Image (cartoon, rainbow, N blue to C red; front, side, top):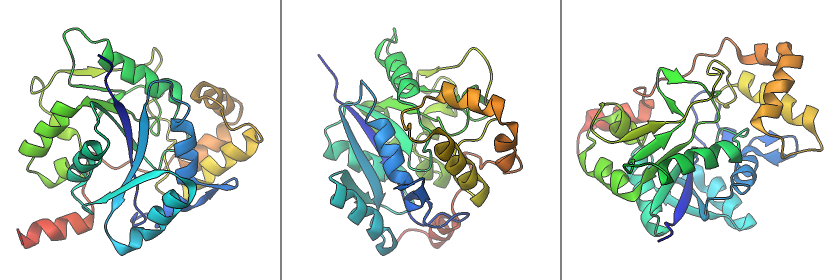
Length: 262
C-alpha cells in the first residue's frame, strides 16, 4: 500500500537574528517561495504544507501562501512539535518530511534520498535523516528529517522538554535505541558548509549564489559545491556564524516554560 508522504515546512516571521527572514527577497522571490519551489521538484512528496503560528505577526506568511495557492496551517507559536502533529493530521500523512523555510538551497534529490532510506528500510525505521547533531556530512541547509506518523505521535505524547517541543524530532534521535533511526550520509564530508539563512551574512551568501546562477533556478547542491570550489570568497561570507544547537530554545519558549501551565 502506498503511503501518503507530506512535507511540512515550518515558517515564522519572528526570527531573533534576522526578523522576517522567510519572506525576504532572494533574487526576485521571497525565500519561502524558493523553498516551496525546490520541494515541489521532489519526485516522492505527495503534498506540501507550510506550518506557521497563530500569532498576528505571522499573518504575512498566511497571506503569502493563500495568495499563491500554497497550503498553510497555523498552530502553536513555540510548541512546534504540536504544530507538526496538527499539520500532519490535517493532511492525513503517513510519512512526514520535516523541512524549514530558512533553507533556500534545499535539494529535491537529497530529500528523495532521505525518504527512500525510510521507505526501503528493513526492519522498518521510525526516522531517517541526513544529520544528527554533531554528525553530518551534508551542508547545513540541506537538512531533511523523515519520520512515520506513529513516531511523530509518540514523540508528541512523550516529549516533555522545551527543546524537544521546539525542535520537533530530538525525542526520536537523542537516545540511542529509543527509536530505529537511519542516518543518510554523503561519501565526502561537507558538514562544515553553511547554506541556511539565520543572519545577514547568511542572506548575503544565498543571494549571491542565486544571482550568479541566474537565470537557472533548478541547480543542484552538487552544482553549488562546484561553485564554492571556484569562489571560496563566497563561502567566507558567513564562515564566522555560529550554528544553533538542537537544545537551544527561543527566549519566548523559556518565558512560557517559566510561567508554568495556564
